[in-house]
Image 1 (cartoon, rainbow, N blue to C red):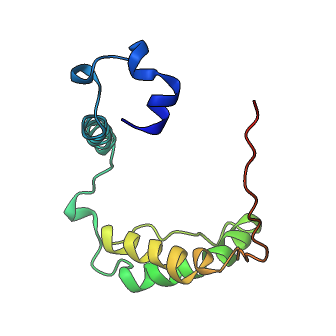
Image 2 (image 1 turned 180 degrees about the vertical axis):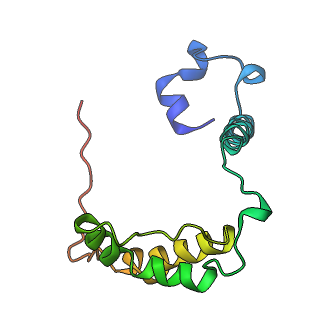
Length: 132
C-alpha cells in the first residue's frame, strides 16, 4: 500500500470504483487512438483529388515547389501590392510540388529560423514546508 493511501485512508473509505471497473492507462490510450484514427479518416474524406490528365507536362514540380516555398515571405509581400505575382504555382504537378513547397517553407524558409532560446541561469532548490 502506498504511503498516501495509508495516510489518507483512501482504501478504507472505498473512494472510487472497484479495481475491476477502473479504466487502465492502456484502455484510455486505446480509446484515444481509436478516436484519432476515426477523426483522421473523417477528415481524409474531405481531401481534394486531382485527375492525372489535369497535369500539364511542363508543370512546376518538386524543385520549383522548393524554390517557391523558400521565397514565400517575399512573394507574399509583393503579392499584396500587385496582381502579377502569386505565392503558389497553378497548375502544378500535384503532390511533388506540394511536398517541395512545404519543405521550402518549413525547412529552408520561414520555419527554419531559430526563434527562441531558453537559458537556465539559476536553480532554486527550496524544500517545501508542510502547512497544517
